[in-house]
Length: 113
Length: 114
Image (cartoon, rainbow over all chains, first blue to last red):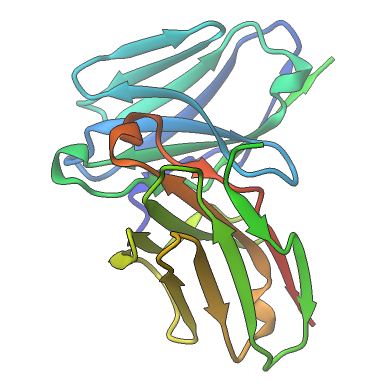
């Protein structure tokens, strides 16, 4: 039973355009969310986070949106750059309950020059 | 360099064998997590240790075991290896105050069982 889902295994976007990566979750106890980025032959690295008390968090070209009623979050990258090509993992946690992060299966983003 | 060190980077072994993967967490981090990433799969949580004690268990097979030593490094032991155990094994660490930035991952150990 996958509690965190990323239904698009891959996504291709033209350089300079917007990339939108989606993540859905089923556990209503989740109250803290992260996005990780992973390059080949490297471990995942933290990208951006959002708490359930917010619906948006922005960091430079990266913005995460959270829709609690729909149990959905998305990561927007604007503008997309070739260096953004990587696998992006969504992760969720019931922080209030001290639970560990649950990861989604990842979406492979390819930004085409 | 994330500060989390995993050795070896690559491991090739035969079915039925036993291997040990090693992880040194980032300085100051007390928690160590082990994850498995099979081909085109997500990160599957295996087990967590906190300051030497097992804290949480995920989908870890009985053939697998782990421990965290007094110096906080951790080892993941995989025995009676099967072809399906071929995967990337990641170690991650965190400290109690760093939860909001998630875990810091090592670069992984690629295990190939032939």
